Image 1 (tube, rainbow, N blue to C red):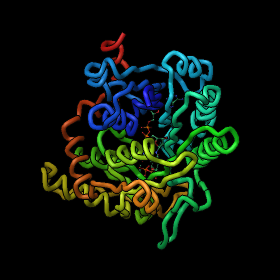
Image 2: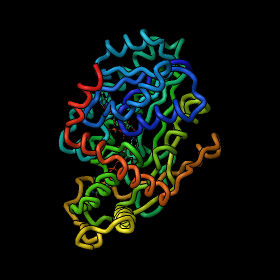
Image 3: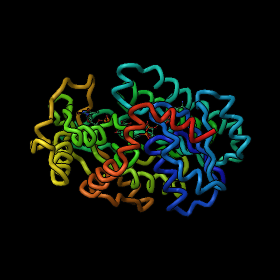
Image 4: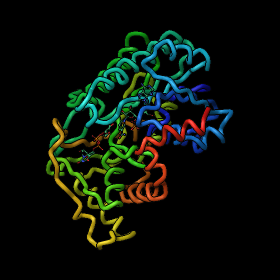
Length: 349
Ligand code: NAD
Ligand code: DAU
């Protein structure tokens, strides 16, 4: 793997992955990061990488829905590997307005597959990042495995399921050397503060209400983002072509419980000015339409075949994440205020 095209590298997981690959892994080649810079993509997330890894890192602002542009990038940078993160990723947004999810997640993925297919001889690996949400919802018992039938319930998960099927089909039909990973809920540094954990951390810090959908008993499996990055790199290097691997954090928890943990840790660090416990800020709000009850991942295949397991526990991961948000309030203010757009104009030509 000499020239990896990373899509969506300015988003939450993509930025962590680029950082991991260049600073911690054994990868010695070049990363070409293609990102449209939607509200969720921040070039600032990798500003230090642009400076420190000029020989190994290139950023290109482009939309994966623009097939001709993507094709040109494959040629210009002799792309031999793809790691595809770019997507519209927020379930609530997909419920309000699904259009961009269909375009980016399905049509964008198709464009990348077509560019890779037309240069198949030089392609070493096309790795597609997907989600456990494609499997639908579990009851109290059981786990998603790689053979669980797809049953997506939101426009987001349906668009991701569709892209998974396209990737798989390009392997079966054309022999494209693909792998797919389906993982659980990520958390950690650089997550846009619309998702549960950063939203709760920031609202709790500011003494604002903490919205819990429905009865708060929905269960998610939490995967620390660095563990996700090590899993992806393991699969890209050693995964079997054509295969799917589930990635989990071994950290199932009800939403209400994780919110209470965040409240307790923040209270321990510093109390609100009126000395109220932050748990008093919890507010039960209307449920998400079609809200999946429980996700839980069985990652035995990845563990047994490729010897991967997560390092972080929920306790260490949450503490590190809270500390990151405490240390990076300016980043939060910029991504939330839209000031980021002005910042980028003054920092980059
Ligand atoms: P994110 O929303 O933080 O980042 C998405 C990135 O893609 C942004 O940088 C955005 O600018 C870019 N992008 C969006 N549309 C684009 C387009 N048309 N062309 C080029 N770039 C575009 O998402 P994330 O949380 O980092 O998720 C990354 C991937 O991982 C997604 O495919 C998502 O479905 C998957 N995933 C995420 C989680 C999670 O918990 N966050 C869990 C499982 C799977
Ligand atoms: O499981 C993997 C998926 O995890 C990824 O594919 C998605 O890209 C990612 O966004 C995430 O989806 P979720 O819908 O599970 O994540 P979210 O952070 O939006 O919500 C987590 C849980 O918390 C879910 O049960 C809804 C609930 N929730 C969320 C928000 C934003 C609340 O109760 N209140 C909130 O304000």
